Length: 80
Ligand SMILES: [Zn+2]
Image (cartoon, rainbow, N blue to C red; front, side, top):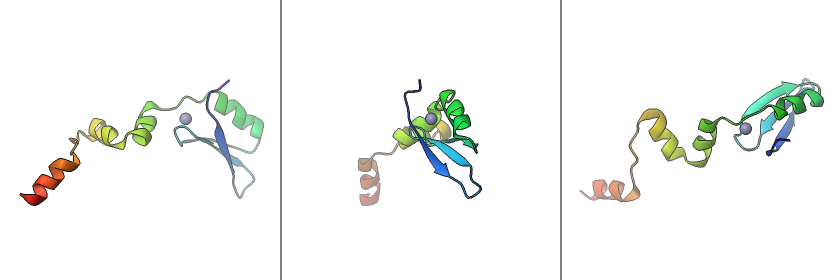
């Protein structure tokens, strides 16, 4: 049994999107909710998605090599 829950969003065409509440990814779109459950059972959150949500600064640094800037550094630059 999966340890996370999924939101089911109805679409105009009668199908449902299944959205992982943990990584916020739309993992499947199916007309039959049983098919959604099967896809949910096999879903594994992408670690990068989790990091992007929980710690955007670190994610930016790791993905783009952007150095972290603290609030103090910014304040000093403005004053100088
Ligand atoms: Zn997920």
